[in-house]
Image (cartoon, rainbow, N blue to C red; front, side):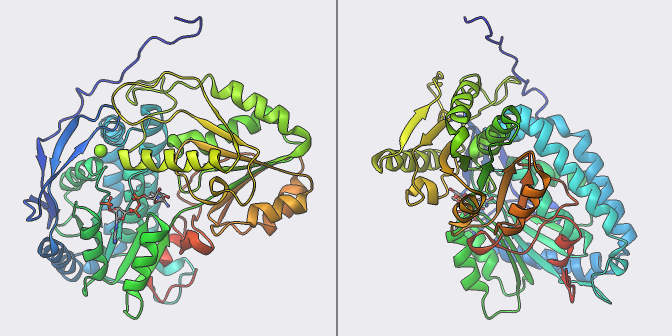
Length: 480
Ligand code: NAP
Ligand code: MG
């Protein structure tokens, strides 16, 4: 054992009260699904957690019908003040059950408990608190003369922040007066199902939120259902395109939050120690399974060697392993399929001539793991500089002048986020103005707040989530 090694500090799973199998949550009750059930596993151990129902076309139809009934009979008749009370209640129950939700999330998704406990779950509660506050103020928020709900919202979310993406979708939809049918990702349905229990505890009227678990086909059916008024999707650009095609020519409103390949730009006057922490947080947070991850580091040539050196030293101290251990910095890769994609793109990076460096850390025998990896000598044309790896892999490129930094940062089909590190406020503002990215962080990275809108340009999608702007996606006649 080396001098600075930590003793194991695993969070107990005793707080979980999991069922052996979960049904679909339709009209306020857990019901059987008519598709073939599937299993959710822990990506850290590959062990079975629970059996999950799969929603067939008929089940999706039942869920949409329940949401429609709830919209017409209760939710659209309720005052904003009363809707807000339910949202406040949900927020408080999330806080009450925070530890349980964090453990379930880390178990099902593979992310470190440190992150689910300190980032995901507190943000989930804050999203519900924030939109609870808006529910009775829609007429006074500059959202148009008479902003009204759309009706039934179909929402499809990915596996990287399962409960947080649920909150980003459900909280504004309910605050604006819509009812919801939500499909979680296949590999991470657990916290959405515990959330359904929270909705029962909160006495939310039946049918206001329905949760249909299943594979991509379930999502596809929801997107194409004729009685859905709005589709909100977060996930890959490929599926986003398919959804856009399916919705084109219908009356459905659509928001798409897709992939990214963010530039994290470090100027030579940046506080280097802070920048190194920011780079690590930018790409190794949540194993790099982050759509706005700072996966392209653009570092000014004069400090390139120093930054890369310090980065390697810092990465060598990161602890990879059991997501439920409170000391863990890097958890498991979410699925075998995602691991294969990360491996493939990393191999391509090497084959194209970039130099690969991997932190020297022990990899557990079971489960899906990928050690923090840096590529230097990356050219803008390399696939690791262009494709979203969605894993703990950083590509390092250099620049000499601010104009070159801006040109390289914008040289991507994506435009979700970016970071700028500099001592000069004027430089930060000037560069930020010229970056084609929806969210730009200055001397920080991967910070989220419910009052701040989030969303992309170009192939990163359209529409904003969060803030007052996030309400417009769920209202008729509302302009941001
Ligand atoms: P994905 O396939 O786009 O999945 C996102 C969600 O859409 C999941 O709930 C998925 O269900 C569902 N889905 C799949 N096919 C669908 C279809 N034809 N119609 C409607 N819904 C459908 O993304 P992924 O496979 O999880 O990840 C692949 C890549 O997407 C990643 O490598 C990354 O580049 C990107 N990604 C981006 C984000 C983001 O936050 N922007 C998040 C996750 C992934 P199943 O889970 O059952 O497939
Ligand atoms: Mg799982």
